[in-house]
Length: 77
Image (tube, rainbow, N blue to C red; front, side, top):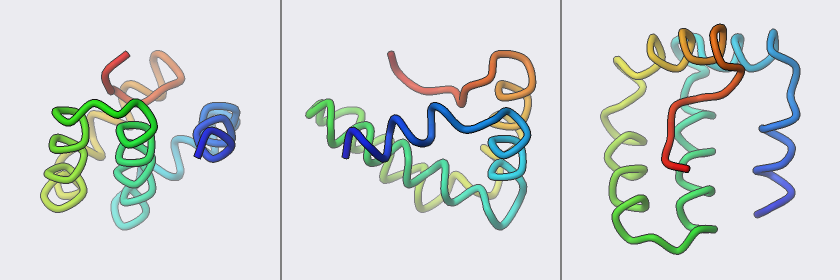
């Protein structure tokens, strides 16, 4: 799992932005779920599952903005 997280974190900004577009944004929801499972925090896992189900319809805009400004998606530290 750590390899997948590291791979997503090290992607170029352009690829991250493309992954944040509607329809493909599910990749960032999966990233959040994997990162939450890796951390072992139950609250993060629950939020990641909710965002996996309902999030791609609206979170992609927030992801795109945070990627363009901060080069990462919004998530717990």
